[in-house]
Length: 389
Length: 236
Image (cartoon, rainbow over all chains, first blue to last red; front, side, top):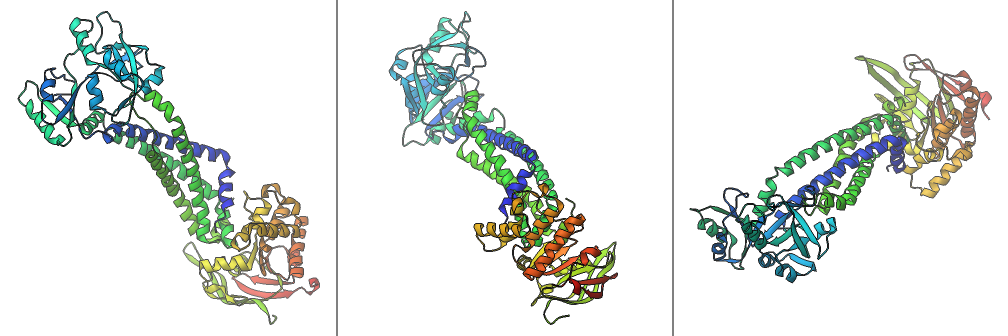
């Protein structure tokens, strides 16, 4: 029998100490949730990549453009059902801080290769019909208050116009993505618009194609298609590298460094610091309760019950901090997603992240509770009663 | 000694190791105390009074010997058995009161009842009655820091008797109290002995306090038993 009233009353005895420890724990668990969510967001595209899509890029680097002429040849490779050109535009909306992805692409093929892209407002037909039209992700539209029919001026950092003015895109539709392989922040516009603008001198910038995205027809092995694509330009004029979509996404994530390792290191350091702080609090608290330990034992409470009081105190303390941290992380997720959505599309605190945070909370509670509990268990009644209060 | 001993000690020895040397505190002690007695345990410092009380209360283990309390040899019990025995058979009153500071008087008194099969309501009622008995019914919601020393010790006595043990052990129960409060506490112990037939063993340095008992057990330096002095005058 553990006197539960003692658990809560001992924790409440030093209110300031309790509040400060809970706050430090909650900050640590909040940070853990945020850091894990960043990793989850980064890896979402990898996890949800389509198995029937192949990305073809320059073998030299992702930043080297491929010739336009590759497109028709790649479309003829056996097993290729559809092909879409993608070109990174690298512009911004009004201010350089308003950064999100824009791609020039083939509009009709886009829907063919990416069936998860669904127009939810406006019209797909309008997007296809108007060369200056664009399709905008619902998250970016919500962030900047853009509606269908609005003109969206984008400053072309990689493709500046001759007079320095913005590229004006008419928002023909807003899309949602049914899979995380495509985020909901991107602006897609007609590849032809970019091509003609470069030809006419309206703007300048690298020609060619960033990547070709191939859709593999049912019944064909994507690995064999990739081998054939690689072999096609093995001897030039420019060698290509064909990868699965998941490989491509993973390669893209790794370009920003070993984020999971970095995040784990930071998270681990924070957790260790908080564990030590909580352990210190619990040891101080246990020392103050030494005489109470003696009294309880003298009254007939077993060693297990008495050590259980101290162990539960650590668990409750950690639980309060952990729960608060998880609530903060969940409540702040929409705000954080809005602020960094363009860098980390699909940011959200998942159930898995919350389970990890709950596990970390329990681990801190257990580790912080073991030492005082073992000490209380081992202490004789006589020694405990001699302690100065 | 009478034919109905509550406490029987046979050859009880207890020593401690201090600075690498064995210090014998109790040396082959034989002692009997009768059921319903009120004993004051007196003697110079180091004579083993508190050690004897701790052994009789099952708070410590003897090196050798037998300690029979009623019909049980508690010297043979292990830790969990002793804990269960203490919870049922003994009430403790300490010099420093030893109330749990974060609990109210009512909660402190209810604490030993958590080890009984009583319901929450029954525990509450038993504790209320115990506090009423020691005259602190109106202080049930007070924490120890909100009580005087005398009141704290009366709460401790209520806690000691709430499980209705037959044996109450008190270690210098008036040591931290003024004369008036000490007399109140001693009067309460006398009443428990007289009206409720509790066997009480009280360690004290105070000759006035000892005079409230029915007999004084004198301990000698070196942990041996001196004389047992009956105090017939205070018998009811």
